[in-house]
Length: 270
Image (cartoon, rainbow, N blue to C red; front, side, top):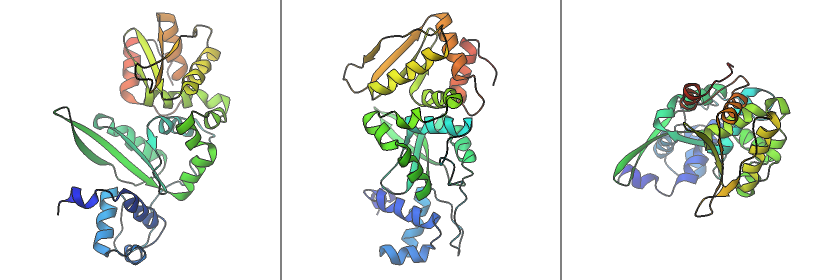
């Protein structure tokens, strides 16, 4: 039986095993609870990227309170980035997957959370070529619930803005930078931001307009299939103002996008 076949259709069970283990249960105890062998439980833990310590029920290192209160630039950034590129599965976990070249960004994410969760690699065949990605899962009932209470699902499903509007004003540039690192793009003559919800794109643009008189409103348009909305900014002064606001605060950033901005525009140091 191939490993791919073993894991197919068992994602929820694998996440449940990872959540129970990171909560302190031993592999043998989990095996009894779910009616599987201890060896299979260990295999599930390995596949999920969950660090294990033989013979113990040690709780995996993690700052479970990280998103309890968004009171630092670091927290605001990662909240924005997860809202763009993160996913909360059915079980108690937060999952994020990026292109393989952005592996160091996942490392920075786990370092911020003080997590020793592993980073895994995936390879998919798309249109005859290999698409390599890296992903990690952070299992925590507390962290998942903190995000849900703030309005994670409402934002993802309906574009409800409560979760972003509740972030303190002085931390908003970091929040915007996180969102942009996930769903934005810098090019030589323009910058774009895209989201599945019209309300999110309008809100993102209004935050920038309030930040600088150089940033004028641009039309927000649907893509041809109507599955997302995009706003585009062009013009040297406007683009410089957009970039300077996004990087006006300290904290994390996606290196390849910062390098593109540095090479194209004047950016305030942070």
